[in-house]
Image (cartoon, rainbow, N blue to C red; front, side, top):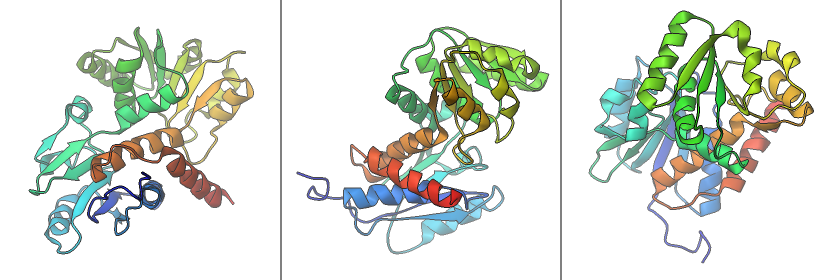
Amino acid sequence: MTPQDAPQPEPHAAAVLGSPIGHSLSPVLHRAAYAELGLTGWSYESHEVDEAALPGFYREALKRDGTPWAGFSLTMPLKRAVIPLLDEISATAGSVEAVNTVTFSPDGSARGDNTDIPGMVAALAERGVETVESAAVLGAGATASSALAALSQVCTGPVTAYVRSDARAAEMRGWGERLGVDVRTAPWGEAAAAFDARLVVSTTPAGAADELAERLPERPGTLFDVLYDPWPTRLAAAWSARAGQVVSGLDLLVHQAVIQVNLMTGLPESPLAAMRAAGERALAARRA
């Protein structure tokens, strides 16, 4: 029996919320999944919502008649702001105090989850990276805490975080204590030393790690660069040129979206290949 032949959930609506939101690939990925799964009547939109507007948007959205909500995807700056509006959050989301997925039960209760963490683990596993003895993290922003949570499942030894300030260093050590990860910190000026690790996770904004592209070893290990647009980053391009393995932000985006679709639809599987192909086409169109 094909997915289209199997009994399908009743039509629901879903959306991604954040600010800015125009760049989001979530509608492309989720709509591709709905089409592949034969979920006719399901919709997925994007809404520009900042922290100040979130409570009002949330209340009004839940009052609407018609097609019920399956859930929301959340991007910055809403991943922590949404927590007070929810009835419960998963242990995964609680571990990093960040929710990127909200799902609604038939009784109207809302549950928050975090699919970024298992998405990172799945993206690494797809490339054969399931266990490493040590790892490095470039940066200490919001994504870095999720990276540490993922590394708690992948890395058996210490994780060194390369950061730009003492305050950021303290934050990363704090997250390490909370997540059970042996986090060591080093100044950004020493970031090239990260490449001695077999797994490097770059969580920096676009352009921030460009300076490191000229400082790679002859045989780098695996780079997980969480960016997907612009792509490739200078660091990722240099890494690939030296035959190092690169896991991209699109890999992360697709794997976490697969889990979101599972949570929102209640279906056990999502079409990873179709979702990735849709994301690649959308990115190619942007660059054209």
